[in-house]
Length: 495
Image 1 (tube, rainbow, N blue to C red):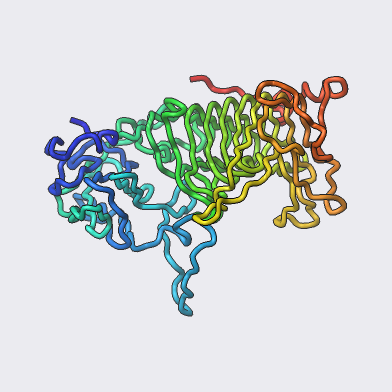
Image 2: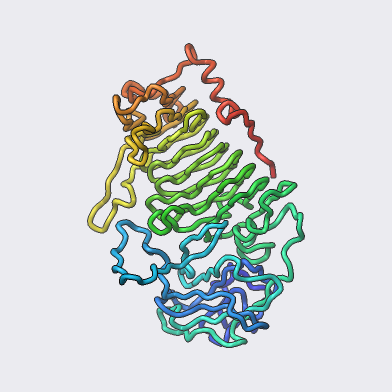
């Protein structure tokens, strides 16, 4: 009998085969004790009879059964981050004594960069343990020891896991063959890899032939980074069935606040799955920094700056939700038939000189009538803001010589809307401090959700309404992706 993650809560420990039962019958293990053929990128899980709490001390150790070497240690006395809650303001840290070493936080290396992470995440009765990336190897047998202090179920039934026989598993003999052009990720352990990042790490940076990573339905709670990758397609089994995400933001991981990223990538396509950043604040679902990136039928759910873009990007039939500056746009990006929902401004468009910016054709914009989530407290219902297409306020991070973003471009063609403020755009830094003469905040054929024309008489004076009588050629040009994307005519790779 093979035990999968989906079975952990469904099968009482007393009914499990002997290989799946630890000596402590109060818990169920994944991988099952003495399991074989386990992917080295697997996450470990313990299901308890009652919800556990992650301890503030105790070790989780993975030991090579043959060499007796400890290959990975998770020390739960180490804080996950300078700001474990992920909320600002951060707790005030105690001053270190002169000459004392800097504080240490949980850290794992993903895609060549260090991230703070949570070594144990609890949902309901299940504690999922994330070993450090790359800690395990192929063709090895491992023992897992868990101190009793590391996890504390409400019923107090957990006495820890130790010794040579309580929890062991053997990894697969070898990875897929070199040159493989399709690999499968499955959270239940039935694929080539158990995590999305495990599959990404396996694929060469620049494969001679396009490689497809097929992700089976499941929940993948992990930070994913495609760094330096090209010629790659990540395709989910179904858009709603594949859920990839993590709780990460600028408070938890300063400077690396995304759940999923493409860094220095090219010719990459993401299709038919969902990416969610479970944190609030500056918390991207996706950050893209690359050329010829395609998003196809992807759902993105983030908070502030939910989608941050650089380079060139083609986005088709996608859904994006966020909490303000929902698209932080530096890229030349062409959106077609997309649906966007935002609590605050839909974009902060920061187009560099010499390229096009955010262009939306046949898209739908829906304002969400809710307060900004980071302003809500137990005593304060929170603050609401106007929902506009784009804002361009004075950016204190830009020097006066740079003059904010004078080439910002956002063009809307055949847009359906609901709940947008009458002015549509702004605030925009005023003259004379800022020359907005080259800003292109343009609209053509903007309607309500039923296709009825809306009142544009109160639009911000910097914005412009295009008409077929005077702007037919301009409208036709902006309908063409290659015009917006510097000559690139994107093609969505089919299934």
